[in-house]
Image (cartoon, rainbow, N blue to C red):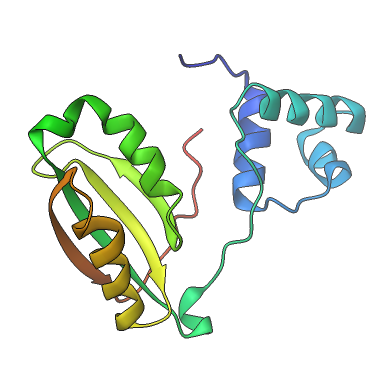
Length: 152
């Protein structure tokens, strides 16, 4: 269920999307509010599930890793457990994101692997060996350009 956010809450979220390491006192100064107010609002956004966490944005090609987006179609008899399947896929090693989508496929999975052999192993063991999965289509990511604007 969507939550109502006022302008200050939206500005906090947008600033933290841009820089999750922004110190509270700097954020408060930018927004023109007291540091204690800013901290309480940020904590409330976390508690309410608006902000799910803070993380490092890793540049995987710098590590020599490759990325792929794998489209997954689920067998018709497995459709009642789509949500659970999505959660299990998200826990697989190398999975960065799982998107439940509309269209010809049911999921789009963003993965990272050390090399093509690692990607192959993921597809074979985590996906193709899964009786719930009907088919997959793998697309290599040549370049990932993260978005820079928060939709708030």
